[in-house]
Amino acid sequence: MSSRRQFIQLVPVAAAGLLAGRSAFAQAKLVDEKGPQAMAVGYVADAAKADKAKYPKWAADQHCANCQLYQGKAGDAAGGCALFPGQQVAAKGWCSAWVKKA
Image (cartoon, rainbow, N blue to C red; front, top):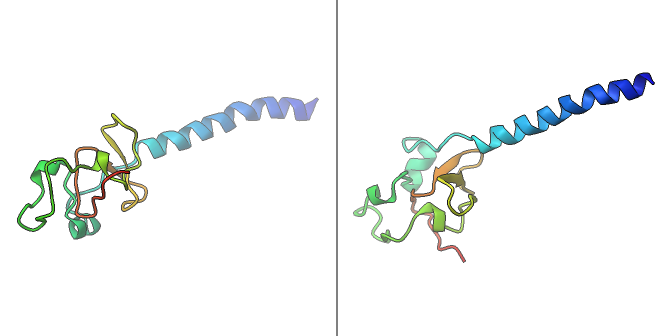
């Protein structure tokens, strides 16, 4: 009976830990535009502010939400990106690694 009681007490604690882990991932920090990795690829949180002189291949219809590297869901304001593990990029953002989503 003691092990059953311990199990019943442990279940809510374990569930809370799992939820906290998911919440922490869902609230990952946004990429800092001034960070070295972001600057190396010209990342901006607003695609309209991309340096068009430096990145002539930029086009008005390119943004993170329609990039193959973007890991967020449609309609999300931000999501993960393969270039920035553990961080999120703005759906309206852009960088020079943009590749049209298949």
